[in-house]
Length: 84
Image (cartoon, rainbow, N blue to C red; front, side):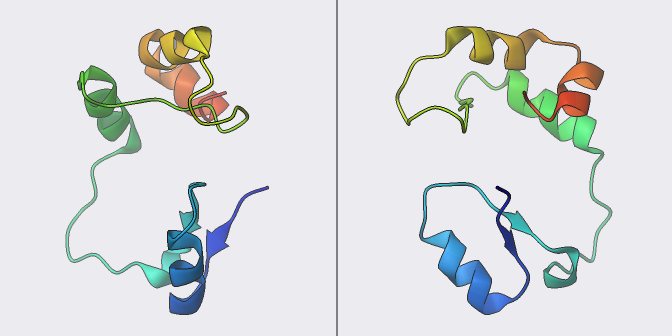
């Protein structure tokens, strides 16, 4: 189930929980051009301090194949699959 914050109240509600959530476009205002998602993902994958977590597993539960796949799969494949 995807959780989406569509207003300030929903953002505050979701912010206090551990599961990631999406922020609806109408809640975000940028005065700058955002980099392409491929560039952001590539930067994060190269950062040794970045972590990868499989939302289908409990926090701390090891899933090395998922982590390895997320860090080594071609960017196009990773983005197309949404990290799965």
